[in-house]
Length: 98
Image (cartoon, rainbow, N blue to C red; front, side, top):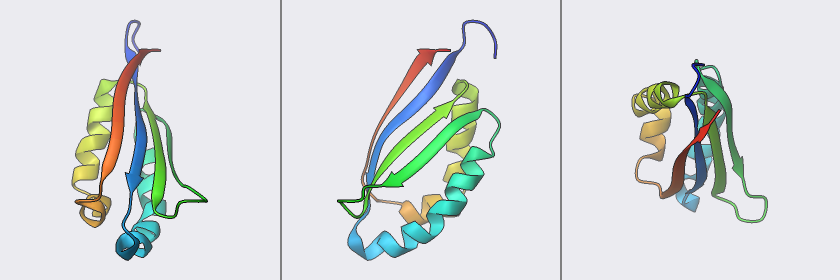
């Protein structure tokens, strides 16, 4: 990482409707594995709330904007994108000094 670069965080949640929950749960392990294997991915977690089925907490950390942008590009061409299309998301993306 170059001096002065910032890490990129994505934090928030995805709320999956009951009728789509089985399909999303089935696709999630591959999505997580592919994301964690990407260059520049420092952490990637999608965790379902134990008390509110269908509500997933999402936390992603990438070493820089380029790595985050590459992740976004890859996911738009993935099965995950198609399986979760139209599902409500509430994310905040921030950049923080490394």
